[in-house]
Image (cartoon, rainbow, N blue to C red; front, side, top):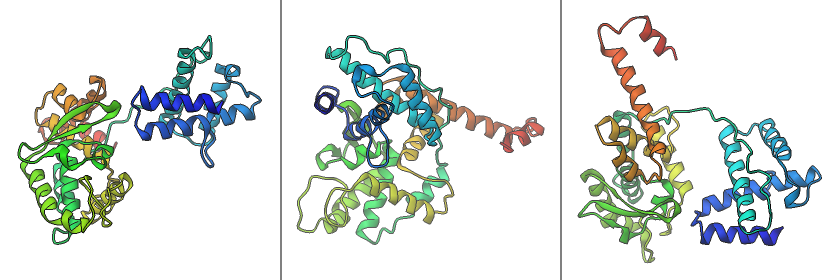
Length: 312
């Protein structure tokens, strides 16, 4: 079992170009980690200790167990995806003749619109770092870039110096599935990055040498967790009551572009979405925002309908 799983992990990394984050999640979903019970741990407890002994009934029991543990539907769906992927691999490698989970259904997910910041909230967030310190210069540059480019936090943390061209205000990034794309930035972001590179980064780096664009106080590459904590800190300093996280700035980037009249396919390319359907959720956000503005602003719309909307 372990030998087969190790081969599967090699397949994910070498052939699927899966990110370390995906590999880690799939490992946890299948085998478990710490107090987290993976699918095959659950299967053994139910008396199934072979790969071909798994069936849809066992999978349904596992999904019910996860729901009882308070696991949200989106996480259950991801775990199911990991299990299906593994069994497709087993069939592909002819380790199983029939995939017993081929027709297993996913839990129906609740559709949730992505939350985003208003333009005023973005301004408050960007102005929160103290530009008189190296860390403040770094943090201002980081926040400006996240909002200006729509980068994923993983892409930002992996960013190297040679990927950025401040003169053309372009950055080459390698996103999901190792697909390369070019993201853009405006003058404010390019200016903040130049200040950080010429001043803050040099002080943080000291005598160390690294190609990492964003570094911590030890001169080492910044981590995704550090970026997440940083955003939470500056949101509090800016007086923003929402729970601000890196992906929210990506949502904000896309929503503000569409509100400004950007074409959906252009936004898709800038975000690095493989499918247009992934980008289309932002059209629902902008329609929702447009309806709120309409009901609040139009003189013939300010009635009980407005009250009903605001009460939601």
